[in-house]
Length: 136
Image (cartoon, rainbow, N blue to C red; front, side, top):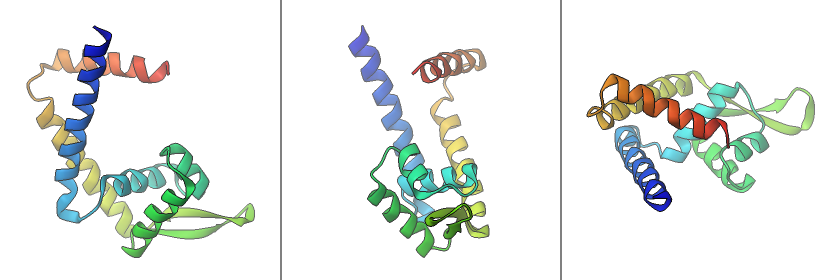
């Protein structure tokens, strides 16, 4: 049973990632870039090291993702006000707009994916998933 449950969870995650990727394709933003942009927006100016840690990626990979966002005008690096050796990342106005588009596209994709569930089923699924995430 555990293997079946794990496989099902992985299949759901893959299906949602595909839907999210397809929903964002029109803006030519990779899912990893979208996750980073949303995180930077949420944290309001984190250091690159925090971005790497939170996204579970190597610092060099986080730098490359932020480079891509910066080249598109969606994010910018700023000096850390408390440590001149460090750099923080902030979201530009264009990045804020992109975050809103991404959030809307993700919500629509998730609603379509979960459309076969009743409201009660969705509440129960949400409760169980939060329980799993919060205890890990």
